[in-house]
Structure formats: structure tokens, C-alpha cells
Amino acid sequence: MKVLIAAVADHAWVENGCLSLCRAFDSITVDKFPYAIPRMSVALRLLINRLEAGEHKLNISLTDADGQKLMNSEMKINFQLPEGAVPEASFSFVLNGQNVSFQKPGDYVVNIVIDGRVEATVPLYVRQTKGSSNLDIPDRI
Image (cartoon, rainbow, N blue to C red; front, side):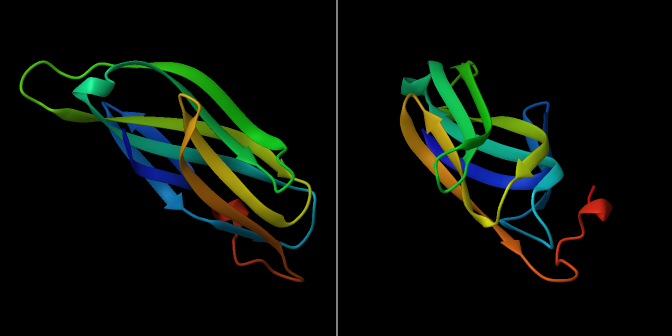
């Protein structure tokens, strides 16, 4: 199993097996805390070979430096490859969060865990600035 894409974005979705991302990012800068981001997606695309077909446990979580989970999703997934000579296939998933609240600035991380093993991590840096921020949340899609 190989992680092809692991990203945090304003919005992500899967349609007919295709993963779409809108405005991927790895940092948020705001002027005051607590801060709730109106919408945030975690996008994941995996490459599975024939030997890995079948049921697996997937966990996607967003945690702070103290290990507290701000977002968490656990699911069982069943990978089935198409018939024929295709040796591997890709599968896409999205975890959408609304009003995810950050109590303080810091280093956060999205963990992608499959069958108890960390397959990918995505950093998310949340910073505080005085005055205007470099991320204009109200205009985000």
C-alpha cells in the first residue's frame, strides 16, 4: 500500500473515483484564539496492489502537540481491484470537518493510520499574528 496523496485543503471530494482538491495548505495564520476554521478537508489517495485487496481499518485524525484529537474518523474499508490484468489500483477518501476549533497556536499533525500502522503524516502549522492574517478565511471557497 502506498500513499499517493495526503493533503489538507479548503475543500476536497471524490466523484466517480476521482479525487478533487481546492486550495491545499499547511499553515493557518490568525490574529486571535480560539479560532474555528469554517471548513477543512483531509484528502487521501492510496495505491493498492492485488495482494492488499480486502478489508482494512483506516483512521484519519488531526491532533495537537499534546496528542488531543481535534478531528477523528475510523472506518473499515474494503478494497476490490477491477477484473483483468490490472496489478494495482488507486482509491480516494476525504474527511470533511466543519468549525474545527484551534484553542492555541502550535504545530498540529494529520495522521493517516492503516491497520494500526502510520502510513503518512501531514503537518499543519497554526500561527498567531498581530493585525491582518495572510489567510483570508471568509473568502475561502
